[in-house]
Image (tube, rainbow, N blue to C red; front, top):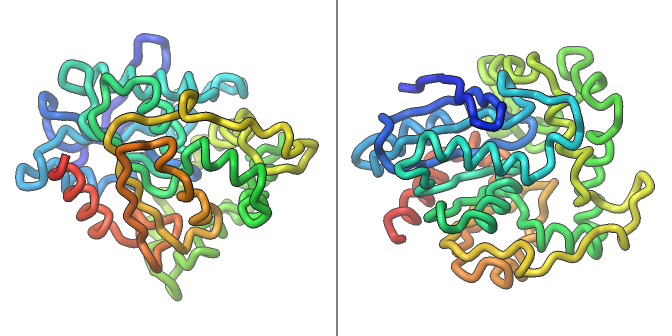
Length: 303
């Protein structure tokens, strides 16, 4: 059973959350991406809350700027350090001794999970990343790989000053292709039902400025719109390395995040396990929840 609650954090941010399993158990924390919400994790949370699958306290916040969470309008309010502050403050309230047993994240949630694991390795036991590029390899590919530059060109559209208005127009006409171009509809994987569309509308109806601010604030965008390749930073393992056991699940048919992002990842993440998922797209959490749960379960049991 999924419960909902509002987490009021000490630094003045409130996160609307979904959860399964009682407090007092090891915390499995789930972070969604764009243009998602916490609801995408419901099936996985109910799975891992069961005693036979670990009996975790599972919590999925809507990130700052999404659904009914606090949504500052200033672009600077979405810097990674502030998003990580939200995550770790929530862990302080929900985790045993303020710890995260397993941090699971997708897309933008993964960006903040990579950062949290680098900065707070003493409070996070394990990391699971689902199709979210490590900042070190992402910066390299954006700087040097024309294919990834082309695949990421949409980021400039989402950073436009009028992006949220354009996205919201005509019942989110420009939003649905993020899913349907990767076979989400009835002629593909079939997961984008009208009921799921309504769940997404419920998130988007609360506003899209916070979500678009993630694209406005990040320096990791491909060349274009006045940004040159020279402006993309080169990131070292000392700056962004992760020293905890990490599982990366990578759907190989993701047209936005290409498999080249996995190359050289072990340089940044020494305790790395990679599980490629052929035939799956960026939306693999919707497409193959059982397979995702199986990979995570095996990883948790082995560490």
